[in-house]
Image (tube, rainbow, N blue to C red; front, side, top):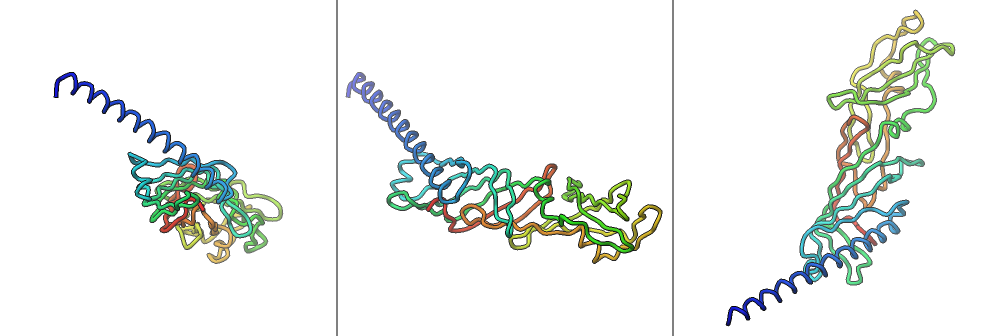
Amino acid sequence: MSKRAIRILLIVVVILGGLFVAADRLAVNFAEGEAADRMRTSEGLSETPDVSIKGFPFLTQVMGGELDDVEVGIKNYDAKSGSDSIRIADLTAHMKGVEFSGDYSSATAATATGTAHVSYDELLKASRSEPVELPLGATGKVVGLSDGGNGKIKVEVEVSKGGAKLPKPVHVLSSVRVEGDNIRVHADRIPKNLNVLGVSIPLPEGTARNVTDFDQKVEDLPAGIKLEKVEAAPDGVDMTVSGSNVRLAS
């Protein structure tokens, strides 16, 4: 084969390769948009999620009937919390081994792992809204949550007696963990007494925990993923989520 023929062949290969890459990227962009729309509808989302199909080439994955890795990002998702809801500010999930139906109407991932975030203001809604009775006519109520450092949550409790509030709120450091579908906030140590307006009030631990400790249920997460772990962060709690045989669209 002459040098000219080899040069022409190389040019043709480069052009065809470029066309294949362009076609592959167009196809993946279209598929991402379709998947995002279907997920918004099937999950009843208020906003269209971000869907990113990883791996190249996309078309050969389609021919094989399975996508290697799909990343889904959802902003401001309202998860169920008993009869109420809790706003998840940012949820990202990586779906592995995504199989889809012949008409692309549904897709299921073999496994999924991800992260989510709930602000302290949102988590505070789970604490008791009404003051809890303490000994000697005093009452207590959680009024604030913040980062306590070293993986702890600082719980701010407002104490009142006879309608007068304590000049300074009481603070306790609490641990946070996952139990089933619940985020559980549990004080590490309860003070034995409170000085309220010059009066020392004994504080039984069980009574105090009716104020400081609470659970936040988080259920019905997108695609059927579940809570796995939770950690205190500077502006809220970071959660790890996971699941198997989770649906991306249906």
